[in-house]
Length: 187
Image (cartoon, rainbow, N blue to C red):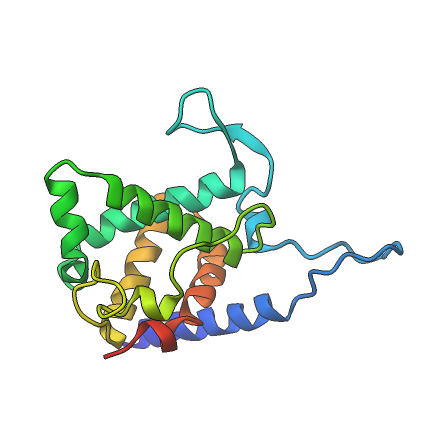
């Protein structure tokens, strides 16, 4: 419990710092370097080979985000505390249909790219309230409560650590995710 509270406090503090930073560029020179966005920290717009698409290039920041997202989806799939919310997706993947997985990966990657400061992407999926409401999204199996949200954050941390994301960056990402608690938690 103490660890969860410490993690939540760290996320909230990181979120407050993230959302109070100025992102506007000025035409006048400044003696202070521009603050890096979380997306910049994750690799920014530097182009690298996409290991999932032979011959294609991808922004390093997007690759880092997608790697964590895909890992998180797999961690969640094995987490009996919350995987029941994704029974449609799990049934599809089990039967060999990965189209739902690919769509979820793309939407979450777009969402997190935008949320972390990427300028080259837009999120075109459902708003977070509708995405997590079974009445608006038949792919969801039940409404999430606070323990489900906590389990999601824990799974996201596991996925980030599997991808060797530093703890300070995980805390910043967690802060962003935690700002969504009030719209995701509907039970």
